[in-house]
Image (cartoon, rainbow, N blue to C red):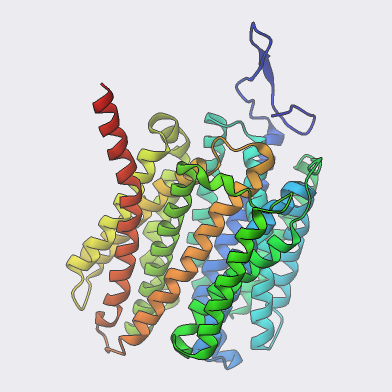
Length: 484
C-alpha cells in the first residue's frame, strides 16, 4: 500500500529498509470515517426491514396487488444486486469518496420522493433507484473501510463494528417499521432522509480525498453484458412462478440471460481493462467466500420472509408483534459482532465460516424437526432464530474478511462488490424459488404446512453451504496427516 496524505497509516522501517505497517492509531477522524460508513450500512438495513413491514399498508392505500407489492421489494433487489460489481469497479476507477457521496445523495433523494408519491409504479421506480444508489454506496463503503484500515487486527476490528450497524439497522427497522406504519406507511420512506443527509454532510467533512486509478478504463461492454444478464436472470426467476417456466417469454428470458453472461465472460478475457479480472476466481478461498455468502443470505432472508407471511397473514399478528418475534436474531448479531475481529484473529475465517454454516443448518433442521403444522414460538421459533442469528453473526464478518484478504487496494472495490453481489443475487434467486414453492402449496388456514416445501429448500441451501466449507478442511487435515 502506498502511504499518502489520504491514508491515515504510519510505518516503521525494518533493518533491511522495507516499510512495514505499524499498529494503526485510531484517531478521532478515523473513528469519524468509520461512523459515516456504518451509518450508511445502518440505513440500508433500516430501509429494507421498515419497508417490508409496511407492505400491507402500502397495498391498501395505493390499491396494489400482491404481485405489485413484491416488486417494491424486488425492484430494490434488482437495482442493488445487478449493479454492485459496476459500483465497486466505478469506485476504484473514479475515486471512492466521489462515488460514495454522489450515490448517498441519490439515495436520500429517492427516499424523499418515495414518501411523497401516490402512484404504485412510481413508488416501484423509486425503490429501483434506491437499489441503484445502494449498489454504489455498499461496495464503496466497504472498499473505503478496507483501504483505510490495515489488513489484520485493525481491519477485522473495523469490520466487526461495521457488521454491528448492519444488524442494528435491520433490527431497528423491524421495530420502527411496526411503530411508524401505525402513523402511515410514508414515514417508513421519509425517516431515512434526514439520516442520509447527516451522513452525507459528515462524509464530505471526514472522508479523505483519494485519487482515481492512474491507469485502466471502463469496460463498457462488460458492464452492459454483466448487468443486463444479471438483471434479466433475477427478473426471470422472480416472474417465472406467476407466468410459468415453459411460457415463451420465460424461456426467451433464460436464453437471453445466458447469452449475455456468456458474452460477458468472453469480453472479460479479451478487453484490456476488464470489469472483473477473472483470475480472482481462481483463488479457492475467495470462491468459497462468495458461495458461502449466497448460502447465508439466500437461506436467512428467505426463512424470515416465510415467517413474516406466516405470523402476519396466517396468524394475523400485528406488524410490531411480528417484528418482536423475529428480533432475537438481529439482537444476537448486534451483541456478537463487536467481538468478531478478535475471533477472526484467533481462529481464522475458515473455522468461523464453518461455525456459521453449521449454526444455520442446525437452526433449519431444528425447525423442521419440531415445527409440525403449528410451530410453538418458545420451543421452535425462538431457538431457530437464535441459531440463525448466531450463524449470521459468525458468518458475515468472516466471509467479508475472507473475500477481501490478500487483495490489492486497486481491486478492493471489485472484491467487496463481488461478494455482496453474491449475497444479493443469491438471496433473490433463493427467495424466488421459495416463493414459488409456497405459492404452489395453496392456502392451509392456520396451518404451517404450506410453508414446509420452502423450509426444505432453505435447509438444503444451508447444508450445501456447510459442505462447501467442511470438505476443504477435511481434505487439508488429511493432507497434513499424510505429510506428517
